[in-house]
Structures are given as structure tokens and as C-alpha cells.
Image (cartoon, rainbow, N blue to C red; front, side, top):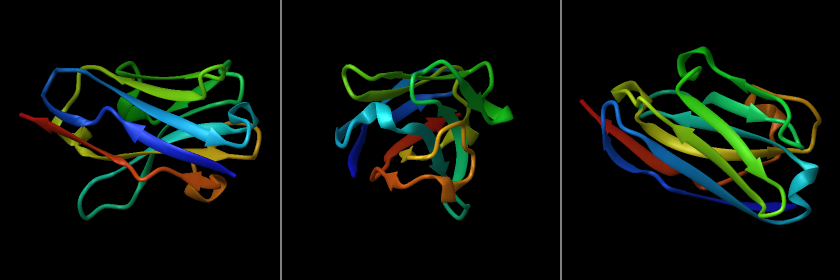
Length: 124
């Protein structure tokens, strides 16, 4: 299995940027497709972005396209999410997740392992 630890969250003003990181340990990181999800208070956890095992394909929810960029470094066992032009509605706990299934997945059930989450708060 793989262990995932997110970092990089914090408080930022609207229009600002944050870079989230997810450090993976355990089973070979490159075996997994990876994703970022978020959960706002009182709402269900939702898909944000996904990347395939080698980093050649990505997919984003419409609300973050053009603002967020997902990337991975298999040599360093890390997954990143660069978030620009942040909006108050981006406020949530952000989770990274790993999937043993190939391809790009938006559903929670496709992911086998989850991190503990990191809080992102965007003030208006």
C-alpha cells in the first residue's frame, strides 16, 4: 500500500496562489494514477484534478480549468497542485488520493488510498 501526506495549505486572499504537495511512501508511487479532491464544510467531497501514472495525461473539473495545474515527480514520489487565481469558493480541505486503476478517474470509489487532507482558505 501507499501512505500519502499533504502539505502546503493555508490562508490566502482571493486572487492569490498556493501550491499543495502530496508526499507518497510505501509501494512504488509510479504504480498509481493520482488525484486531488476537496471537501467544503457541509458539502460532499468532490473531484478536482487527476493525472495518469506517468504524468502525460491530466483532467480537471471545469471550475478549476485554467487556474489549477496537477503534476507529479515519480523520482521524488510527490504529487503537486498549483492553484492560481484562487477564489473564496475554492475554500475546502484538499485531499490527494492514489488509484491502482490505470487512466484518469473522477469518482471517489476509484481511489484506493487517501491522505489526511490540508486546509485551504481563500478570503474575499
